[in-house]
Length: 424
Image 1 (cartoon, rainbow, N blue to C red):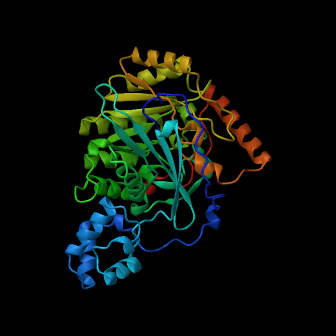
Image 2 (tube, rainbow, N blue to C red):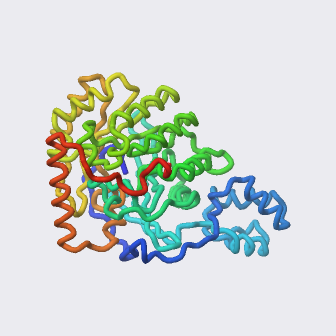
Image 3 (cartoon, helix red, strand yellow):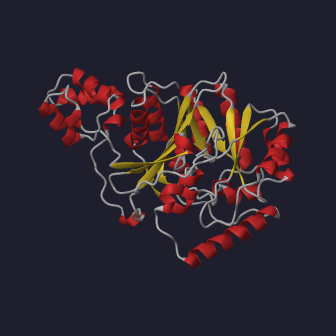
């Protein structure tokens, strides 16, 4: 998850809220509720269900209004519907796919981390970030959402990578993160202004459901958020980028680049072993040319690993002349890795070197570090601690891999399972 601006004041100690406890391992996850989530249905689908079950088609509109604009979380609370229809809907659908949600706040309430338990017991996260009006900038409320439970890509600096891949999220499970945050905002007379697919998972490996979610978010009859207020991030699934380009969407494409040199990116983004950085950027370049939308490139800055002058120069060569913007984010400390975030003076020097090549650069400061607001941190903390020998071996492997990468050696390790073209 990528924050947008630095916090105005030093982070405060977060409120202590009881959390769910240890998340079951994937093999221990319980059975999933097979009823579809109501938010994952298009208006026509719900109208067809109403008609097929002997109810007036206009009832679909009442249900969707309650789902997208109301505060109800169960069908029993929608009092505009007759009792028999409420019972029928409850038997066929779920109004909310989030079985439980707990919130941690920090940054004086400017950052809210939600830990959602799904029907099968797995945990996912969303992060709501508030940006007060400042000068010419209007007040904004940005939500970072997950597209998968866990992640198959396995970037070693990412807490979600520690969890491994569990499963793709359903359309409704993606959208209900948005509905959950919107209900909290509406209670304060506010509304979501931006949504970013930068939480747990690789969005382009669950692309059909992500696209269906975006359609619902754009739809004025449902959420009604303009496409230009939505950002979809990828670690470099080239077929998925090309598919997005063919569709011609107007939302922002963000690429989790992290390194411009292939040997290093092989380690930081294991997907690079399938689609090298030049191929990823070429696909993103084509996307920008087709849509006219600037591509955002994200670099998590790791002290002594990807923050050297050579890395800055390689990035400048890779992106020179492109319709692109670079975000530099010091790494959040992640358990069981030997790395730390790059000091701000070094990040600033890196930024100036890239700007000198004519490329726009912004330094993003982390928010919510006290509550594990970076992607996957909170879920990873509740997944149970690995044994010391596992931690030691993981650290040794990362140190050896990064040392080889810094010598310019390409990785010989296989591409992570579940990240092939067929997944896109």
